Image 1 (tube, rainbow, N blue to C red):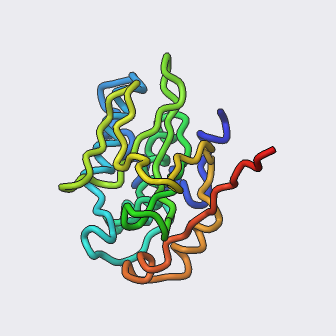
Image 2 (cartoon, helix red, strand yellow):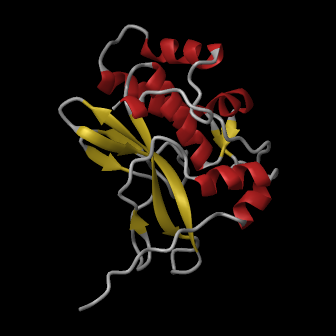
Amino acid sequence: MQEYLRSTEMIDWEPPQIQKLAKKLALGSDDPVEITKRCFEWVRDSIYHSHDHCLNPITLKASDVLEAGTGYCYAKSHLLAALLRANGIPAGLCYQRLSRDENGEPFCLHGLNAVYLPNIGWYRIDAKGNKKSVNAQYAPPEEILAYEIKVEGEADLPEIWADPLPVIVDLLTVYDSYEDVWENLPDIPLIEQTKK
């Protein structure tokens, strides 16, 4: 579990502003399930999704997301992981492959989190931010994510990453406007099983 607790370049939970918020969100509780709920709801509701709210700058590191108050789903998941790790709760990054228009190609990656909860194990949460068509909630052990897998080619990718995928780091480093990021969202093709 140590790799899901460490501070990294992108999930940097050691800066004072992250430490302060993490302590504030945990105040009065030592229950990981309750602290996770508070951190999840805070990131979901207090950090604006860059595309949904047409906001710059493009953020990547958890501390930059907190400072700017905005980020794409990937960046918001970095901040949520940092807040959880700062509270000693193992947290990683997950991805879904989703259709951009719910009809098939083109596809893109969507970023969310997995957190390790006592008596539950790994549990996925999605702090993208709710709107008319999105209603992500925290209700362990039931997962209520922002998006369901609906069409062929979409998938819940099973890995739980300790650090963001390089393709995500590249995306949020190369482009500096929310429009450019939106036009260049990355995709990872699914590996098809060969038939015998």
